[in-house]
Image (cartoon, rainbow, N blue to C red):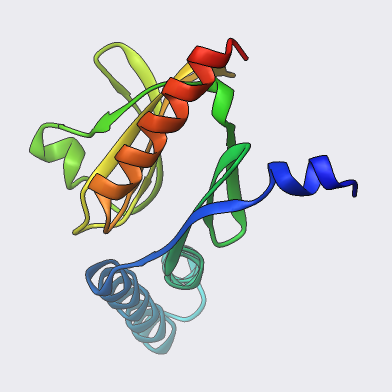
Length: 175
């Protein structure tokens, strides 16, 4: 790696976002489906419902581990969102606009993890934890069908300020 590449990857901001409510939700759902599976197997044997409960337990125990920490990294070249095994990289020159997320309650509190939804006729990927505010990134060029990315942060003002400064510098330099 040369000095230019290394300089482009300098971290400007790193934040690890956690949520006790998200963790408790996924652990409670894991416990519920494990309990239902145990009861079903004890009473009826390993039938179709037992398989459904076991699959749901597996999904929610995966969520418990995978969606425990959202890592937000802003480098000199990209915004990188990491949620367990999933990562989304947004080159800074693809950020058209950044602002606080304002959604109706059903969409705002509709769950935790990674979600895809349409907001104001724009398809969005959302990296969401339950009790934290979200920042929306409008992409200059969509990635697949995705035109916006939103993510939870404990420091929305600091994150927004940094992203808006970067977007302004990128637009001035004509990159």
